[in-house]
Image (cartoon, rainbow, N blue to C red; front, side, top):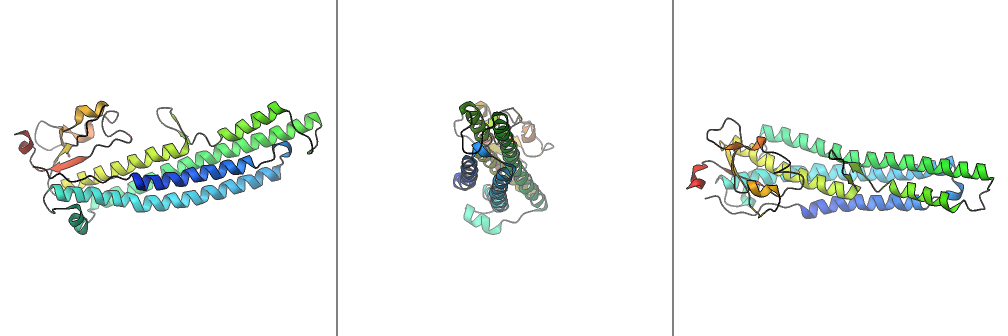
Length: 279
């Protein structure tokens, strides 16, 4: 019987990174709100862009450090789970003391770190691009309106023009990225989804790699009474490598829109003999 041990969760760790993105977006919004839309100039826009760039540089540094620390921790958890489930240790604490990344896990973790950092960088790059466009558009609108109406810096622009400019600047930070399904995400929400998914995937794949390395070629998908399509896979015995004997589905062939989708909470428990669970 597979030992019942708690699977690691990463809600706190993810919340720390999400808060960093939320604070950065608030700081950028505050910077944009301070712009004098009635008398914008190229110098004003350059100063604002420089401040936004500084905020995003700091965020990129913080997120890169977060990824370099936490993705390997998720891999360690996955390996430890496999060690316990295969009987090489009794507790996760004991297992973590003997965790050692095998070659395939070392390569996998390095790739996961690089991919996650690239995905997070894409979020800040998108924000940077949208903010630049918004500031340039607002600057052009302000200068054009002042020129065409002959208004000096001491008078107010048309209310409709000001409202449009404010809307342009405000929308610059509303959408961080558009995913493959054409869904629009606010930066912090996308980061939350992305990092939760990356951490879960890293843990799961590391469990599989460690299990196969220890000669265990099967796994069981966890149960938590899911209400979506995941429920059809709960408790399913799967192969961890396609050439393993037996009439079981290979985990790599399962549809990702149904199981192990973004933010999916299901994990895989490594087992040596699936027939023991069929009795």
